[in-house]
Image (tube, rainbow, N blue to C red; front, side, top):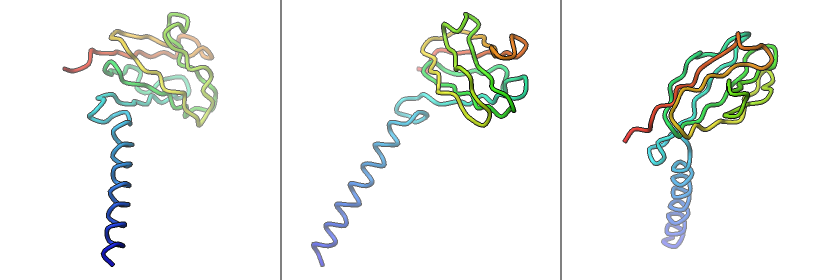
Length: 124
């Protein structure tokens, strides 16, 4: 009986170690300080239109409209371009590695559908 208890305790310790390791590697935890933020694509707008994040954070765009949209930086997509994000899907995350203001728009709907990501220096 004592052996079964020791085996169960060892297995439980291993499981807890694995779970703790997974949590430590995910965005938004205290170890990395980075987080994932979602912008929602609507019919002809982004929600929020202006978003403030920190260096190291990532943004993904979730399309809740009936048509495809993009989130393309105003520098002709040199900084980031999600490509077409179909309805009811999300873009791949875009990580922002430097501070600044990044304006973007939808290539499908022109610069009337636009937004801004303001990236602030990481807290020390």
